[in-house]
Length: 109
Image (cartoon, rainbow, N blue to C red; front, side):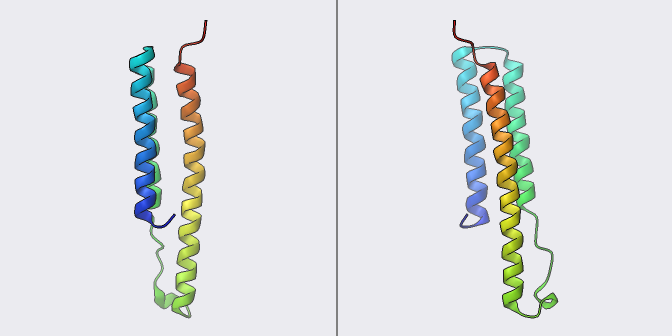
C-alpha cells in the first residue's frame, strides 16, 4: 500500500460496496430486513475496527535508535506488520460477511 491514506480509502470503498450490495439484495429479493441490517452493522463495526487498528502509532523516537536509518527500518517493519494484520482481519471478516449475505439470499426452486 502506498500510504495509510490510500489504505483507509480502500477500506472505506470496500465496506461501502458491501453495504451497497446488502441494500440492493434486500430491495431486489426481500427477506428479513433485520437480518440485512445486522450484516450492515457488522460491516460498519469491521470498518471502524480496521481504521482504529491502522491509527496505531509506532511509539518510539529517533533518539532511541543508533541511527535514523535504524529508526526508519523499525518504523517500516511496524507499519508493514500492522497493515498485514489488518488485511488478514479484513479478509476473514469479509468472508464471514459474504457467507451471511449468501445465507440470506433466496434459494433456487
